[in-house]
Amino acid sequence: MYWDEVADEYSHSAMHGYNGIGNDIPKVKASQIRSAGMTNDEWLKSLEAHYNDPKIQKYKRDLHLINSSGKKGKLIKANISPSEAWKLTKKWAKEKLKGKH
Image (cartoon, rainbow, N blue to C red; front, side, top):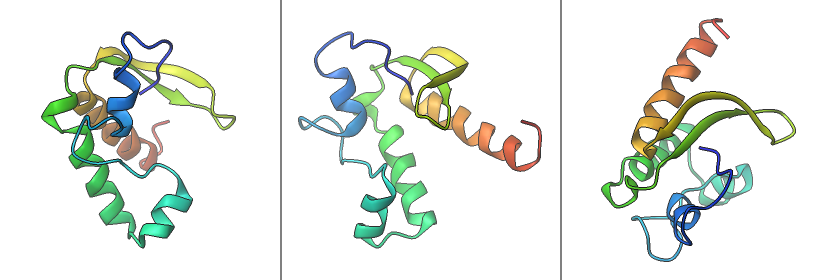
């Protein structure tokens, strides 16, 4: 999910598991994943658990592609919950693998 602005002081923190919001701090950098010794499957399951955590579902934002420079790209869907964003991200990835993007 892409955060153009923060609606309140906890929105961005919640998405990263900071300030006691959510059940864990998701690993998003390759170095974090390697340090934790996680397999790809373990990492994806941890992300799914985090983005489906009921404690963070009230924090809605827009889901965008992120381009290679790390900047916001094409809008996938606006004003959605983390769990919906996770579902759409998985759908996008499956379509990408099939050559639809």
